[in-house]
Image (cartoon, rainbow, N blue to C red; front, side, top):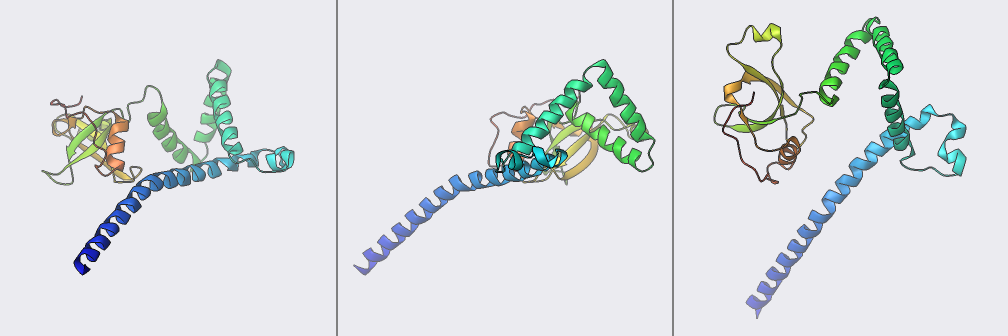
Length: 219
């Protein structure tokens, strides 16, 4: 009987552990998702400060509306893009760029940020268009990188043969990482989308993409 009782306790303990882990797997993604969304919404809600105090939802309706600032931010971005798409808007943007480019200190920061944003968000940009497999941080150890382009002319003249500029993200936070320049022959193009590669990185290799590595080098 004592042995049987101990076995029952072990079985019940294993069941409780399994149920707990199952519940944890359900709640952790939901809580983290809600937390990230709340941070984003609270940050975007700061755009309400652009409106006069009288037009704030709390003063209009008597209570705060979560996400009202996010809607306002999206509307401002959409209207800005709409205005900048026509001839007059493009002229205004050009004048604005010219004005900022003549302000000391501000011009260097603005130009750098604008170049990065144009590369990342422009429809014809080449950033993060391909997922690559490279050997890093030493030969024989492989990691996923993203093609960002090719080295600039000043650097290209010092390198032998075609080279690639790549971004190697860290896990599980892909917003930080390393910028590398390596020979094109040392990179393999992956038969997966950028989104699939990001999921693979964020999940620390748990969410494996269904496709396989191509046998040719990227261009």
